[in-house]
Image (tube, rainbow, N blue to C red):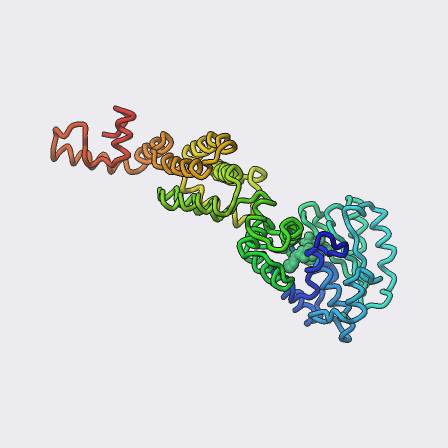
Length: 429
Ligand SMILES: Nc1ncnc2c1ncn2[C@@H]1O[C@H](COP(=O)(O)OP(=O)(O)O)[C@@H](O)[C@H]1O
Ligand SMILES: [Mg+2]
Ligand SMILES: [Zn+2]
């Protein structure tokens, strides 16, 4: 495949040509199709969304639908056969002008557009300008554009796309209909890739595809180009191991499973996870590095609600991480990281990798089982805040019942007893 010079990357081959082929953006597709059927297509649209979610794709399909020759008026689904549809697909239509806002950002560039806007379309119903990355235009260019947007000739449509709508002046924003594209969630990516692999006759295991979908991280284009890389690298049959080896991904599912085992203090399950890592043929060092990264991410979420650049992940995954972080204390996390950092150098020079990993996960459980100073302080604080009154009342009752009960109060919870041992004399009566 790699030797074939005609090889077209999957993202291009799999660019949807019809609305029905676009996935994950039903809210936009339906609205646009309704607008066409009802003859209410606006003059300006702005598609907002992260890269590889379908902005350019949808803009082109809309252009085809408006100019399709299969009917005497715009159609809700382009035929993809007529001369107009074909020309737009090939980027050869004289009436659909695509402009990259990043490299045509000056006032002169926009003036050129303005000068051609009034000229009637060559052979189509509409003259359509698709301006990508429109937020890159200069202030002067936006001003020039605004004039055109205020009174566009009836035959002209503007479709804009941007990843960064904040940078577009409000005067422009108020003159267009805005559509926000969704990030592709993992399920959408996964299903799409499975379907694609089947149609292309690619041999890739479901687990491999699942990993590619994760690597896409919300972007269909990214997922498809990862797939291309994996195919070029892995050859005939793509396994999860190939994907992991290529991307340095370890399976988040295993890590998440392992975390669950640690939280539940389930040693058998934790050892099973290690076995899975080894069976999968993963690099043990790399796995530990991923685990360190994982605990680090949880620790970041422990100390920050909006981690921003510290932790760039999809909102869905952040949500999962947040839930997992809630099950740990910061002290558990830092101790776990410490522990893993210590075993890391041991892995490079030994045959007993599995044993070392096993020992490591058991230690993680051990760390989890220890009560940490953090926890003690937290529980003491809780007591001070709320339950202390109840405790006092109970203590008073106990005293009344058995005035000489002394130090070892059997009704004190285990943690409180421990707190008392650690901090003699600092505890509620
Ligand atoms: N919603 C989608 N449904 C199906 N494929 C998509 C979708 N969005 C993106 N893709 C894939 O990613 C490629 C790039 O999409 P594109 O529309 O250019 O993204 P952008 O939002 O960056 O403009 C397409 O050629 C297509 O293969
Ligand atoms: Mg684009
Ligand atoms: Zn057509």
